[in-house]
Length: 82
Image 1 (spheres, rainbow, N blue to C red):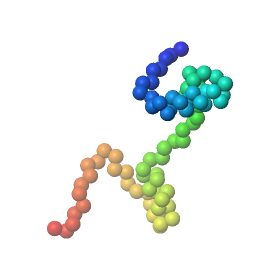
Image 2: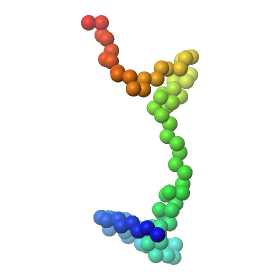
Image 3: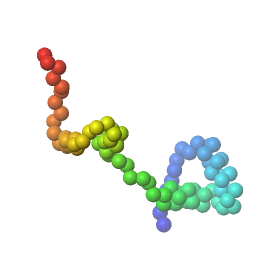
């Protein structure tokens, strides 16, 4: 089994952990293990990409064709007619 050392925990956090552990009837160390187990077992939702968010936001605005991808292309400044 691995060990993890966490330094510089605020006194209020330590007191809160101790209180939670007492309520559950186990040690503060076991309380931390339970919290960590729960944190990593909960599935995190997949993050959508920026382009997908923009497309979803303007889906009803009349855009009928997909927008071109610009991966790896140099971005040139807009011409202002000067």
